[in-house]
Image (cartoon, rainbow, N blue to C red; front, side, top):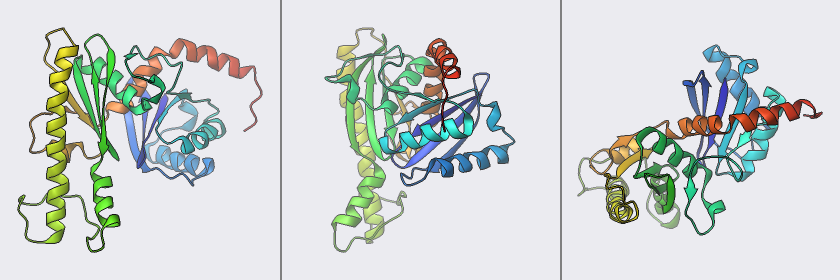
Amino acid sequence: MLLAFDVGNTNIVLGVFKDGELVQNWRMETEGYRSADEYGMMIKQLFDYEGLRLDDVGDMIISTVVPSVLYTLQHMAMKYFKKRALIIGPGIKTGLKIIYDDPTQVGADRIVNAVAALTKYEGPLIVIDLGTATTFCAATSDWRYVGGAIAPGLKISSDALFEKTAKLPRIELDEPASVICKNTIESMQSGIVFGHRGMVEFITKKMKDELAEIDKSGKPVKVIATGGVANMVEEGIDCINVVDKLLTLEGLHIIYEKNRKNNDARKLKLKEEAWDV
């Protein structure tokens, strides 16, 4: 079995693949203060509840945008699974040609999403990841990652209104019945939710126009959405073709398979080394 970790700023999504199929997935809060033992015991409880065995995990792969959590998860992998996890980063085979001023600045999650989307849906396409931040990534039909855009996510926008104003309250992210609202909470929900949809529509339209100029295949640009609030944002707009909530986990499995031969060699080397965990 393969255990995959998608570590975001707000949540860690982890999934178990068996024979190429995602058999189980969970979501837990990202907490930098947790120790390797805490993460290890939490995962053991999840495995026990689903009738899975830690010993059946043959390998692990991690994508993270939170560097402070990476060391902890690496240590947890060695202590509880006796595995050295594969980390998404420089040197990993993805099949993508990254057209970016500094390719190392592209977030691991954005690369993983692009690989998954191109494999499942083919390009040209735009991937919108609606999480803590809302990211837009553009990729061509010949697997070139040509850039994108980054905006504050719904939760960041909501928290900023609460933290940076004297009288506005903290609110639940929910869609009000109308855009014109008659109380403060619903007015904030209207501005945040409907405003975010408008932003997604505008950036998507502009990116489609630009991507059509970059990609000369003549194929229509597909728009794939993923992330924790993808369904909320997708409702009421028509620029998104597919909502795929498990896109990043599936991308991790695809990248693992691309690196499997090198990974097997890495595991053989590890057997010759004495790892003190």
